[in-house]
Image (cartoon, rainbow, N blue to C red; front, side, top):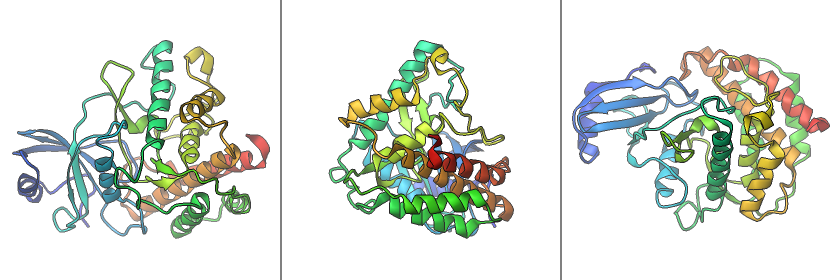
Length: 344
């Protein structure tokens, strides 16, 4: 099996020089430390800096690690109000480095991990949260037909399809019986909201750590990691980001939470304020079925964590520090179940 932390530069260099205009002389490759799914590398070349993102080697769950979908989504968004890196090349030939990959421009900016934003002062935090809200609303306003993504997912019945999909993904990577996950899965299946016709391009993992910020300004210069993007319900995207305001801290995951922090002192909006700002931007009266949207996202993240735990067992997890995932499954499932049972 190809190594997950290194690239075959002898095979990669001539390939990139032949397929990317202006690419010259691959000098060094460094693997980024963050991320749990698709290994991502910083490429240093005589012609400049690039980013390569690949599928992990080895057996993969069906529809997981869809780097080709990432490439397609970001390519389509190039001319919209959603900031994305410039795409350079998609390689579907697994014979080059052992798995499918794509190359995009390197965006020099800040990648932040803690949603409390300790790096800046309170007024800047407020501006950054407003910017995150603005970009998410802009994403959901994209005309998917106009940008060529009308067939990027199925229209309608989004939550039903997602619950079915992630239930299957969870079963495919299940390592032990978790009662909270069983109960949450059943609750979601029995409380699916009616289809209200809202559909948009959804990111699927819209979080502080998947944004690249301008080096000095509270402005997003790129939204990255589109692996989970599809056509879906925009409020699912909004609820996923808001989940970080109430999620339990998952030790070792690098995913910090705002739970229990003094939001007012930090200059960060409350969940209600953030949702209201989004609804104003989108012209919505309110966020319908909000408790379901939140519970669903805890369920989905628990299923994702289970997949990471399975890859740890198999030895092909992208991060060397992914041992957090196995115990996180029950924690996330219980958090979602608490919301489902009226704790929202």
